[in-house]
Image 1 (tube, rainbow, N blue to C red):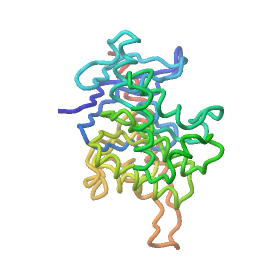
Image 2: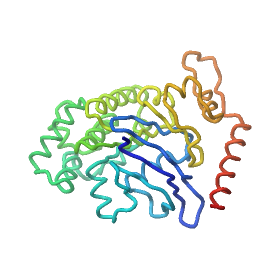
Image 3: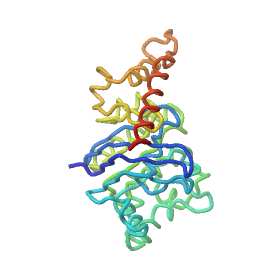
Image 4: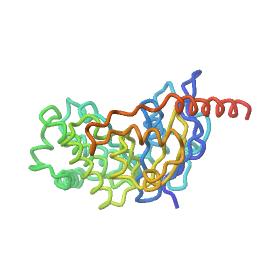
Length: 289
């Protein structure tokens, strides 16, 4: 049974165009599912909808988001926040802006455990120290007393990973968690996330534009274009034989590190035109019921 099930989720700007077009996908307990596509495809919007953090200018117009069998969209706001807070967490994209610069690291990990989940302060602090050690941060006590600007980007991202796992959530949304890091640190962080996910058995919705990342950490993936899922498949099948022309073009556009002389291959205009036509046809069908 899927821990997260999204059925026909549509999101749009209020009095504006659609951002997600009847998106459906499932994430099983302990599974890692990738969301891939170019910038603006709607990857992060799916994660925000699941976590209940859509911008005020955006609204859900139809669909279901079932978290452990309960439709979040049918819950009163307070109950929805409580359920999401107990079961899900976020690893955000930019570790510098995600952490409050005026607060020390310790409270930024422990306050959620104390205020939302009812932990005692000593238990929450012990949990924070243990998690910092698990994400391979030396001298956790010093780091808990530090401010974000006193730490490197890689260390800040490790702190966000520790914070996401703090309450043992059943689902984590990782929103391009390595984008703001250099290549060497990216590799370390990906390995760390994969190890934490495996040890804790957490379902992971991994948002990325990097198919190389997908090949390393995901079991299944959804390919999006303009807020529409064009392919939903296993990672193995995707890399062996993508079914949709746009998926195949994305794969062909991936840099070939084994052949530095090979030039970059953009997605052909004919493929873009064809998938745009699919979106137009989809919108026309939706408008007519």
